[in-house]
Length: 163
Image (spheres, rainbow, N blue to C red):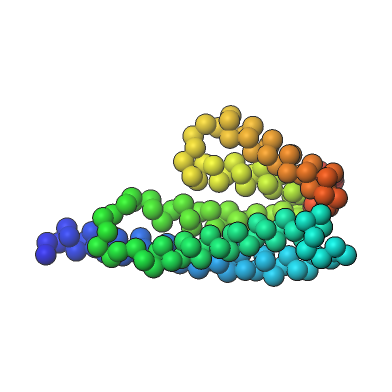
C-alpha cells in the first residue's frame, strides 16, 4: 500500500467522521427545537390551523432527515473514493448558521435573521449570484412572515424593525 493510498484512506475516513458528527449535531438541534415546539401554547393542540402544527411539521422533518443523514454517514464505505475536499464543509457550515439563527432571531427579528440565514445558506451551498440570492432571501422571508402573522395568526419576533 503506497503512502498516497494511505493518505487517501485517512481523508475518506475523516470526511465520513465529519459527516457523522454533523449529523449528530443536526439531530441534537432538531430534537431541541422539537421539544421547544411543545412549549407553544395553543388551545387547538396539534390542529393544522393552530400555531404548533407547522413548527412541528418542519422540526419533525428536520429530525427525520438528520437521522437519515446519520445512517448515510454510518453506511458509507470506508473504501469509497474521496468525494470532495469540501464534503465536510457544507453540513458543518449550515449547522453553524442554524445555531447563529437561533441566537439572532429574537434580537434581530424574524425578517432580518431569516433573510440573512437564507442568503448565507445559499452562499455556503455554492450559489455565487449575489443579487438573485439577496432578492430570493428577502422575498422568502417576507412571504413566510406574512403567511405566519396574517394567515396563521402566529406572532414572530419583531426585533430591531419592531414589527
